Image (cartoon, rainbow, N blue to C red; front, side):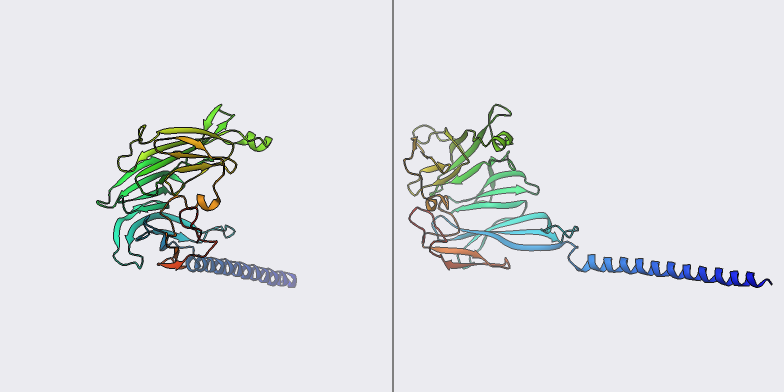
Length: 326
């Protein structure tokens, strides 16, 4: 045999072995990476896990009982690790009212599909008003849950959820009527007052276009618009900027844009106020809130599995009424 052929054969065999070794190492590395990825995805939070926690608790308007919501949903770490929030889905909520120590619990609704925003517990009139919305900020509405038979009645559908402005519904301090605030702004793009104007021109030019407050009083039991002599129906007032509304201790409802304010009350003509109410008058906006009239504050436990009653902190926790900054 030609010695050169022998050398070439040995070289060819060695190169083939080296290539096979590299291929085997590459496959081993790929398999190891796949195994590590599988273990990482399976053990580091990428699987959906069930969460069940109290999301909110408020006092009844008389400060004697508590209503709270339990929220259930599935959660996992984001697949894109750079995301700064977890992924959540399949939201359901339950509503209860109970004594302040959690005893004497009564179930109002169990595992209803959706999320709960704010809610108000009006025990004297026998209902809880809830702002409910679906995943993706869809199908938002205010619901009145009757405490006698647990029935749910739609008060207002928030057709403009996700817009610049939001329909607001509040129970009066006594719970006898609702107020509906429909804030709109002049929209140059369409030439009318709307809630969903993009405000592009306003932002680019620095101009502030007129805003309107449409205020309507509704009977909390029948949802009928209150008539003249009992209520004023719908009133429209012009403002210059974004609006906030709140009830005052005397039962009137004040809407302010920070520079001017108007007072609305059933049976009375709206009155422009000379003095803008202090911030302590504007929050909380009605008698049912996290702080009661005795200065007791409801705090959700960090793990979401309960709530505690604490003494309100002066200057930080405010109850309803302009003089109740405890």
